[in-house]
Length: 620
Image 1 (cartoon, rainbow, N blue to C red):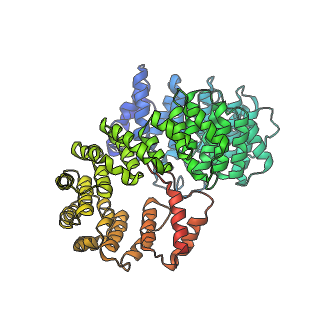
Image 2 (image 1 turned 90 degrees about the vertical axis):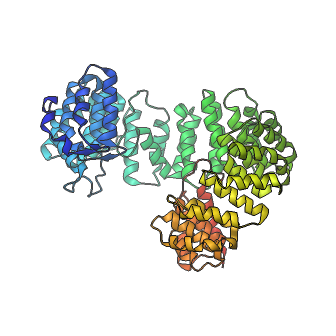
Image 3 (image 1 turned 120 degrees about the vertical axis):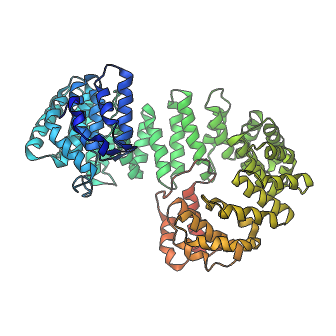
């Protein structure tokens, strides 16, 4: 343990952290000892951004440990925060031999330093503040697997005393976890304290793995329904809070998770624990939407404010299109909330529109929004004549950004009726409001006039490369002239920077893209996998032959964003090599989601992955 007076004895300028040389670390540590509360806050925040940055540690991290340990003892007002910084610095997976045991790794040096100073930090386990005791327990847990026998025995005695006598149940529960990390297994299911029973069940579930025994599920359901009343929600390793650890375990066993979520909701959904767990299950497992939406419907009456109701309704809206026939109770509930006057109305109306309920149309037209207009256009294709005037009006009022993108996306669903919005689309193109999607829509549904073709031709000279590409392709669609598009794409593909966006947009040119092959072919072996994928797609577009494209695409297939894009390209070609079939079968049959949701995507990537895999498996 070292005091601030010794900071200058370390050659900090020879050490590095997340942002380069560690010259600023001494000043940050000195600031911890100051009287300026704001300066202390800034110093702690800065230390998390330098010697511990997004889970990564650096050569300067270990030398800071003895100074931070000294601060933990001498800065009582921020003791818990400094202790937690020490705990996260030493965070490692005891099962990973490469982490704390290999010489020369920063985390190994951190753990060695923390092990040396731990005996002096053990008195923090008896601090009067519950937050300090909880943080100190996490420091012990961080290096529990590395302690020498004498230090381990001393730590275990202290922790055991907390487990037996601490007046705060949450501290006793934490102590039970640390005793387990120190190698002492204990099943405390008969404890009178629900927090301790819950901790014991979590430890047992971690040891056994899914599926969990019924007695564990019963404890998790009974004792986990109510959040801890304290405001010190400190994490354990690999989580952001104790609740995250609990929900992580429950999402690993879908049957247990659904059972517990239902019981938590029935108990009042305190802290949105049940509805939050159900939401995570829908994001983690396939084909659980009916059960999850039933749980959301059950949770709605328990929400204490409009924000909680809006969260449940947003989840319903996210998944309701996956139901073949949304039930009457669900649709009636959405209709009732959609007519409310608070912030729950908007997500309820969006969900109602996505449910294909005919009552949604009148409500959308009464209180139109870009997202609900788009949802209504998709679910009520026969209502285009009523929706297009409202879409035009909203575009004409100056909609920008994602709102304008949604409105133009709604036009895409309206078929020939969308042509009436041509004046508004031209204005978007002139004023550069969502100009890229406006150009695409004009190419898809526009009428050839000199005004349109001239404006698109002008946009091919824009400083925005995405607009140049979209305008060139729209011009080609309307006129059949390939020369302007080839000129634009020759410039785009010869420029520096990411090329995959431009390569992937070449499909409308078809064989007319053949003159671009000298620029496309070298990119089939590019280092960047997105470029290889898009080059293979573009090569097939230009040549109409799959021989060069298929091997490149097949080598990229996997449950990743680029792997999904490669799978889409293979599905468009209609050919998958035989050696891909095992992977395709796993994509098609996995009970858990292999890809997460992405913002602003109309279709869940995992649903696309499964559908494409099934399609390719069915192809000859």
